[in-house]
Image (tube, rainbow, N blue to C red; front, side, top):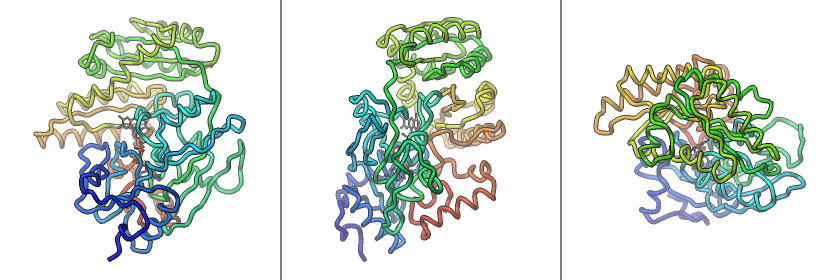
Length: 451
Ligand SMILES: Cc1cc2nc3c(=O)[nH]c(=O)nc-3n(C[C@H](O)[C@H](O)[C@H](O)COP(=O)(O)OP(=O)(O)OC[C@H]3O[C@@H](n4cnc5c(N)ncnc54)[C@H](O)[C@@H]3O)c2cc1C
């Protein structure tokens, strides 16, 4: 039998190294018994693997940095992990055309830093920016902290080079500022979670760099007051570049790591930033006024970038603080901004009913929360209750006119609810589109569409 070791590609043979490519960051992810790993060096490697996989009907999991929180980059039994981290060059930065061109393995922060040297800005900023790849960001349509002003990855991708199942190479979209020729296949590939093709080059829009951000931190004794503040900020003419919320439990988790200066007795904390060129000082003063009028009990304004960074340090510490608390289901629902408080209250009710701790935090300016539902690994009953609570949060969001995933994607974790959100007719059309690009179903099977 032929295996990838017979191809002219870099197949990982060391079992320990291979094991490292087996799982991602999703809850309970485990590597299957039998899988191969190819670390693609260039386009030719990807073509070779995709041609062979199609011929032999072997499943392929395109993979970046394995930071997926939904199980979308876990190896598949009997399949190939096709990792694109090594395709990591930034080949073009063109401030005049407002574009950068890079390989899929470029790390998000690496691209941000590279374009910053030219006075430019690549806005999408997942909290995993320091290690996740642009290929993974494109495949998940990654969001992040500054989406409230700048949007998500899809708002920046102009053109893609993609290798299809069977090895055919196509280029989608356009490099120019405008372009309406034909269907938007770029948009189709963005967010397709490795189910339609392997992204081998990304042309993305970049914009002139904003000013270093200034920050306002506000604490609230009442959730309704925090909610009124978010609504007031959404109505602002000069949209904040960040509006993040942490509930009481999130504040307590962060404070248990170190003293970030948050009060212990508040119901919610809001962090708000402005990076508007020439107006950051004026904006944060105005936001401070809005937050006070909405009922904030304390408002702190950082009027220089270093202090602004310090105020945000507590928010940055949230992921490690929650990691330290133990295993959890991490949610990613997104609801209309006006329903955010209802979602938080419902989360609190679900926590009380299930006897589990649920920590609420996230990108409040987008209505995108990441409730963390904690369970005890030694107690199967607690894990079952956590899964049931997870399901309740998802259906609550759908009931509010929201979505099952704001930015992390569907993967395997959210696949059971996809039909509920899309409806049968749309789901069938989406499956038909998948079959056009991947007729033998070799690309990331079992993810997103179940088959
Ligand atoms: C601490 C932490 C914080 C996070 N914060 C955020 C956040 O704020 N916002 C957010 O959106 N996400 C966040 N994430 C989730 C994750 O980082 C993103 O989904 C990210 O885009 C995944 O990138 P990756 O390189 O790790 O991709 P992987 O996890 O390796 O893969 C993710 C998906 O992309 C596909 N894929 C990867 N490379 C390619 C390619 N070249 N071609 C085709 N498909 C490909 C995979 O098949 C899979 O479906 C966070 C994760 C962690 C661990």
